[in-house]
Image 1 (spheres, rainbow over the protein chains, first blue to last red):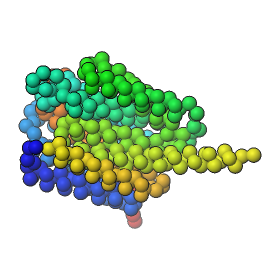
Image 2: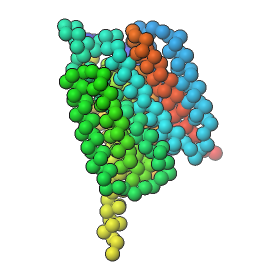
Image 3: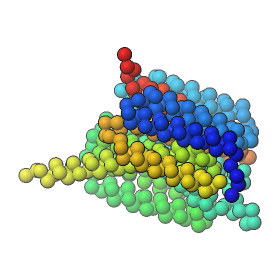
Image 4: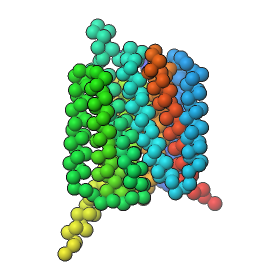
Length: 274
Length: 88
């Protein structure tokens, strides 16, 4: 095991602490404070990443950062207050799309990230798993956000009986296609896995939105978090693993809890009927 | 490195589960706003990809991911600040 640079370890620890404090602040009603702490944490892991990597093409990276920042600024300030939930949904889907791009870039150029076995020149098993998970979870988050936006964030729908079955079947199929990609890595396998994951994300969000847009949004945020965690294992970045683990676990549990509560309420209402 | 990564990830998952368990339904959107900001950490992965990629296609995907991640981070930050009404 390679020793870790103490400066990098200190940076990741500070970022993890800031992320934890931000989550706690959001629970205590201090959303502004939470957002500020989260931004500070992001700046720290960004600085640690730039410190620990040989960065080529810095002008292009800065241009892309500024362009994205300007788009985010325009969206964040431009939308009316009532449309902020829809904006957050879209931005979570965008994070999922970014995860698909990251996974795709690693697939296109695995040599640059040390993902190939030096003896056989084949994709390493753990790298293939992380790559397939990054792309599939990113696609699920993207499709889930699209499904919520399609219905509208204020929509309080009914649960269709076939949706859980469809979502479960698509989740199993996603796992199967991911296993196929890991066993025999190829562009076709990755594309098929992405396509099935899109259907799984759509089905999962359509099932969750029966309990309301909030639970569905928490679940999709959790999926985006897991995509970030998978990409952290692909690129071996601890800061991303912490951020992804926090978002994935918190979002998934909150989403499933709220969906379960809505399901029990629906069942109780049905039993109360004459 | 991988063991450190795994331990950090599992510790973060445990803390995330505590947060997800403690959160009340009425705090849902506030937590979603923070989760969106956490998901924007994909920006860091995008920077690594764009910085280290050797092929043009991989670098282009990295730049697209940076634009998406950066827009998510700044847009989510402003949206989260606007969601909470400032105290008088």
